[in-house]
Length: 247
Image (cartoon, rainbow, N blue to C red; front, side, top):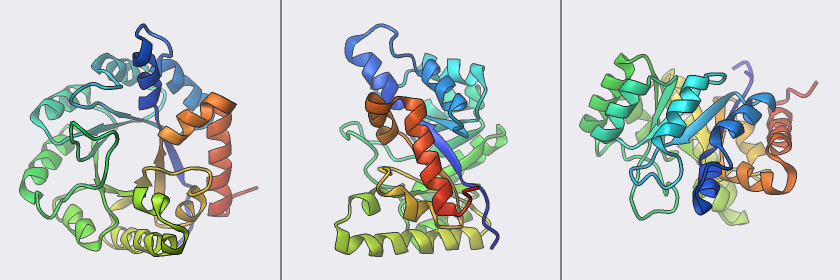
């Protein structure tokens, strides 16, 4: 297949985490979104959680109204979030698993188990004009199930690969490769994300079937040292080099 450009979506949830730690309005997620735009990011990802632990409703509305970059709205498959998304009308919605006690998303959706419920959400969200992605583990059966219920995209969970010991990382990477190839065969757009850093991004970026990476926590953490624009710039350069698109 012909190598295509690789998009970078930046999750800015943890700008809000820092703001909420002290209260007030600083740092402002909208200001972070502006920096992402200036630094060459291709999209903004926001996860509005049930407990509003970081991003809040008004953050999402302001960034959607700003509109300089496509908004990828991560959401649990609940009636509350469905209602919010239908009013928001973002560019894309990514359905993710969510447990109240978890610190971060711990794994992918079990689409095979919850096929009928997820099919209903996919259908209703697509009717609003959004592109619908399902956050799944790199498992062939999950890719097939996502295709069967009408998802436009899958986002492969890269956390297991990123956290794997050196002698296991190649196995986890191969699982990502095979799942991405299956998605491509089904004409389902393939994204990937979770836990990616400067050290782990290149092998994933080199997978030709993956067209978008969504990266958040690492970039916001690295921004403490280097600034958000510089962190995005370095990540973008690593992605482009891995893709063979350095000019």
